[in-house]
Image (cartoon, rainbow, N blue to C red; front, side):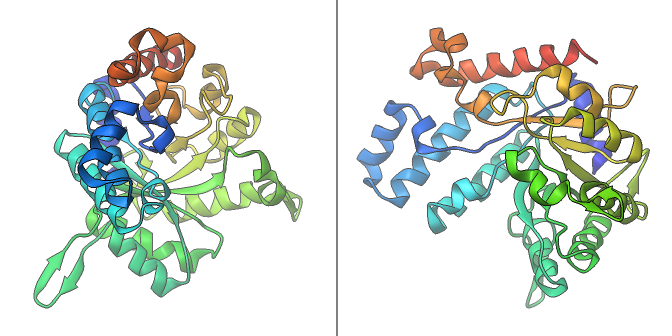
Length: 305
């Protein structure tokens, strides 16, 4: 699966992932009013507004990027109606030729992780049939429970040619409370990185493993260390733009060949029309603003690679 991502990155010349993380306050008033008029100011109305918002953004950007990353929490907050739109969004993006990274950060004891892996990446047996649920191409995974919690995801990756991105050094301000603590003289995130490399050795797909890592762009000096420590691990990189990381901060995440990382931006793209830079597009043309934001982001990253 990671080779498919690399091929799409090379084709688009944009190591850019659009984070489809919709909030109701991102959605233009004309979309909200239309959905509320049809379904009411309820969970169904909210879900419909999110769907119409997502669809327009995807329709205006699918040809520019290799993948998208919907954060499942933004859909779960609207209950079953939101999860229906999550699944609908996943399938719509895949029909457009995009790879989908499900951002669910799953991880539990072995049997529970196996069920999560089946739900998001694999197939579940129902009678004599094999069915897919969310069926994303990649999934973010929490390694806190160790090998027991990660191995079921790796097993499904091998069986289904899917991929995962394991949390190693995240972009949030308090990540260091645990991740930076020294264990035997090394920060915990380095020990997790070594386990990710170990887990990925049996799941190679060409030069890179289908077991990738989430590495925040907000800590470039740590990214540089991890890049050397994990030469065959693909990085999913949050933190660019709205969280403060610049293109220069991204550079250590990449290998010398310009590969090795895919950079996510969520509200910086999907809510671009709210930024002063893209204000000229206005709410009615929010998706055109998103398209321009993708073009600008790809050029910005390209300038440092």
